[in-house]
Length: 95
Image (cartoon, one colour):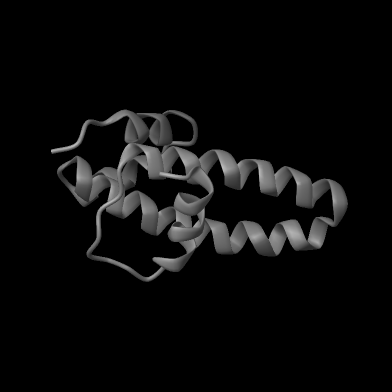
């Protein structure tokens, strides 16, 4: 699947509590979101702040769906651990 399409799908499913997301969707959203945030911060900082708030909500929902795909949505609580949590969530195998 196209990585950009997975990134866009994360925003389309921003209120989807019941779906599932695999590792590819999780990492494509994380990497593209990071790049977009850097570009926006370099060009127009207030836009980067607004984008980061929207991407945060989309990222949390994606993490909940990713946790469900890995076996339990409680894995999304790993995001509270700054660096290690997203890495662990991103490498969990599918159940």
